Length: 232
Length: 349
Image (tube, rainbow over all chains, first blue to last red; front, side, top):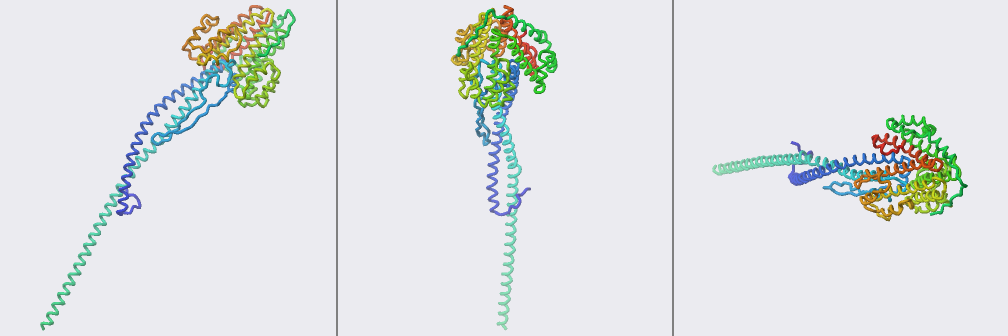
C-alpha cells in the first residue's frame, strides 16, 4: 500500500482525492486514446517514411550516375563552369501542422524544379548530360525535403508516443493506485477516528452515569439519615 | 549581328607548310588501340601512361595542385590549349585566320566561364581553374578579366569588339541570353569566315560548319522538345544558319514522338535510329551519338584535299576527341561505370 506522503487523513482531503481520482481516470482514458491514435498515425507515417527513404536512395544513386556521366561527357571543368551560372538557389518555407496535439513541420520547397531555360545557363553551349544531371539533382533535393518533413514528423510522433505512454503508465500504475490507496487509508483512518469517538463517548457516558448514581446514593443516604434523626 | 570584315589573302594560299606540321603533330596523338588498353588500366596507370606521351609536361606541372582524375582532366585540357596555340603560331594568312575563327569557341567558353564566375561571386583564382586558353584570348588577358570587380566591368572590357553586342544582352539577372548570344555570334562568324574563303576545301569546310550548326540545333530540339517547351522559346535557342535551319526551326515545340518520327530520312538518322525512340529516358545518349556523327563527318572530310584546311580541321577535331576520350575513361573509371557504358560515350576512328 503506497499512500501519498504528507496526506492528512481528513474528510476534506478525502473529498479532494475523490475528485482527483475522477480527473486522473478521465485523463488516463483520454491519454490511452491519444496513444492509440498516435500509434495508428505513426505506422502510417512509418510506411511513408520507409517508401520515401527508399526513393531517396534511388534518387541519389540516379543523380550520382547522371553527374558521373555528365562529368565524363563534358568534364568537371564544364560542369563547374555551368554550376557558377546557377540563377536562383532553392528556398524552403517552414510551417507547422498538428497531428493529435503533436506539432510536426510542413516544409514547402520553392524554386527547386526549374525548366531547363530557367536554370541560368545558355542552352546552345551546354549539353543534355548537364540537363539530366541538374534535373536528377533537383529531384533529389525535392525528395530530401519530403524525407526531412516525413522523418521529422516520425521522430516527433515517436517522442510524443513515448511521452504519452509514460503518462498513461504513470497514471495507470502509480497515480491512480496511490490515490486509491490513500483514499482507502483515509477511509480507514476516519473509521478509526469514529470508533475512538464512540468509545470515548461511551466512556464519558458511563462516567456520567456512575457519577449520577453516586449522587443519587448520596442523596438517598442523606434522606435516610434525616429520617432517622427525626424519628429519634 | 555584327558584320565580319574578312581579311584579303594573296592567292594561291599555301597550305603545304601547315598541313606538313599537322601531319607531324598527328604522330604524337594516342593510337586508337591504346583506348582499349586504357579501359583496363587504373587511373594511376593511365596517368603514368600519359606521362610517356605529349601530356607529360602538363601532368608534371599540375601534379602539385591536382591528383587522380582531376589531374588528368586539367592536364589534358592544358595540353589541348597548348596544342591549339601552337597551331596558331605555326600558321599564317588564311589558314591562321580560319583556325583562329574555329578556335574562338574556346574564347566564348572562357568569356562565359568568367561571366558565370563573376555572377556567382567566385574568386579570380577559382575562376582561372576552369579557363582553357585555347583561343585568341591569352591567359594574361583572361586573368585580367577574372580580376575585374563585376560582370559589367568584364563586359566593358570588350567595348568596341565583335563580342560587345552579344554581351550587351546582359540584363543584370540572367546569363542565359548572353551565353546564347555569344554562341550564336561564334557560329555566325564561323559561317561567314569560312564562306568567304575561295581556297580548295573551303566549300567542304563550310559544309562541315553548317552541319555542326544543324547538329547543335538538333541537340537543342531534342532537349527542349523532350521537355515539352513551347515553340517560341525553343526557336530563341536555335542557332541561325546551317543547312537545315528552316526545317529544324519548324520542328520547334513539336510533340516529342512526332518530332522523332519527322527526323527519319535525314542523313544523321542512321546514327541515332536505334536510340531515338519516343519512350527514351534521357537525350544524352542521342547527343553523344550526334556528336560522334559530327566527329566522323569531320574525319571523312579531312581526307578529301591533302593540301587544304581540311586536314587541319581533322587534326583539331581529333585532338579534341582524344582529350574527351581520355576524360571519359578516367571519369568513367572514377565513377565505377561499366566499360561498355564508357565505350559507348567514346569516339574512336
